[in-house]
Image (tube, rainbow, N blue to C red; front, side, top):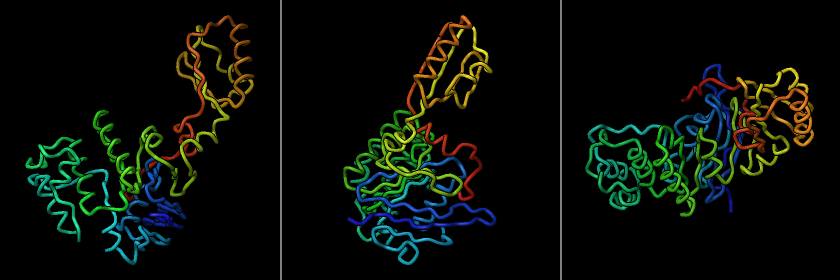
Length: 309
C-alpha cells in the first residue's frame, strides 16, 4: 500500500532564515507519526506547508495521492487539522461551529454524531467562551473530523492541558489509529511521543536528524547509560571526572550526573574511589538511555523560535 503522506526534499525560507531544509519523510496508512524538535526547529513550518497554509520554496508533498500544491482543494477534503490554539467567536456554540464547518465539505458528518463522539453533548449549546481548555480541544478534534479525513494533523494538541484531560486526548488519538486514520503528531512531550507514535522523526535547525521507531532510536543509544550519584560527603568533581568512562559530568550540590558507555568498569572504579575517600552512597541510580536522552543528544544547543510559530 502506498504511503498516505509523502514529504520529499521540502525547503522553506523566511527572509534570511532557512526554516526547513531538505526535509523528507513518509507516513503509512493507519500510522501515528511523531514530529519532534525544539522551538525553532521547523515543525510548524513543515506542518503549515503540508496542510497548504504556506507555499514551500521547493519539494514534493502529497496527501492521499493528491499534490498539496496543485490539488489543494482535494487535499483539504482529505485532511483534518488541530492547531496549537483553536480560535472561534466567543458566542458561537459547538453545535453551530460544527454546522458551519460542515458546510465547507461535500459529505460532512452530522453535528450530533460528533458531539456524542467527543463528549460534548452537554456543552452543545454553550458559548465557546465558557468552555474549558479540555473542552475546546475536544471541539477542535470534532471540527477536524467534520469532513471524514483520511489524514489527521495534530500540532501540539495537549499543550497546557491538565493530566486527566491529556490522558483522555491520548485515548482519542489511539482510537484514530484503530479506526484506520493516519496521524501526524507534533508534540513537545517526549513521553507522549514514545507512548503514542509508531515512528518519529526528530527535526533540528530545519533538518531531520533521526527517524525510526522510538524503540529503535533508544536502542541505537542504549550503549550509554545515565548515572546519578549522591554521596556524603560529596566527591571531588575533578577526581570523579578522571574515573574511567565518565562523560558529560554535571554537578549540582551533592548530586553528580554523568554518562558512561562501559557501566561495569565505571561503577567498579567509582566504588574504589568511594572506599578510598570514605564517602558513603546516599543514592545511586543507573538507567539506560530514554527517548529524552536521544532527543537532547541530537538537539543539544538548539534554541530560538520557529519563524512560522
